[in-house]
Length: 221
Ligand SMILES: Nc1ncnc2c1ncn2[C@@H]1O[C@H](COP(=O)(O)OP(=O)(O)OP(=O)(O)O)[C@@H](O)[C@H]1O
Ligand SMILES: [Mg+2]
Image (cartoon, rainbow, N blue to C red; front, side):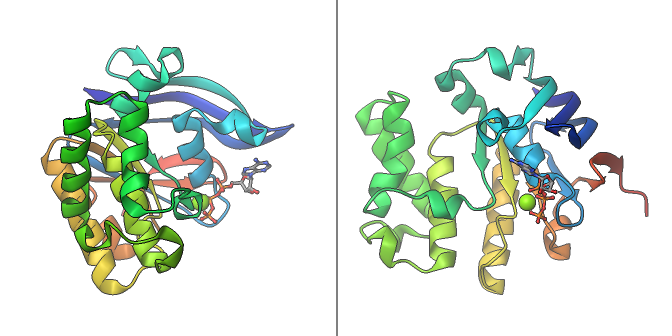
């Protein structure tokens, strides 16, 4: 199975933010997108996630996973295929306790109760934050919140993952830990589109694209 973005153009009013972008991510592959501030990386994430209209952006193009067009899918079907960790996703944690945050997605996706508990435990183990399970989110540090936001997306067990700057704002040990998480997910055959500025992050990528002035290029070096 493959995530395919085909001829994606995103505009804000008359301004082109993404210009005819096409890319593919295979199952089990880590693909990195790099580029300067404002080049359109997060816009690419929101467009693939199908939420750019919420930000007043207009979008043309096809986004598919396998032979399924994402825009045609129910939210349940879409979550099973694609999980997105947005650049500032740790600002959008809204539950009181960590375990409630992790329960939210699978509960809304009608996952059976026992399975939800297993997923919560696994997501916490996977991200190395089991010790935070019963903590209040508002009392956590920024880096801890980041790991909670990663864990909460993992509970959906999506086949593909988009990760927008997930190592920013965390210490070196945690960056290493997060890279390790992404590697393990890829080994489990999850396809990952990773946005990052960090050189060490990019080292774990199988392929690298550069986004510049809204256009996507293969990195040639
Ligand atoms: N909802 C919006 N309305 C208007 N302009 C927008 C909107 N979203 C993004 N833009 C503009 O599109 C451009 C790309 O923004 P985007 O957030 O995608 O950049 P980025 O590559 O993720 O940058 P950074 O590295 O700083 O995270 C910027 O010039 C931004 O101002
Ligand atoms: Mg961004």
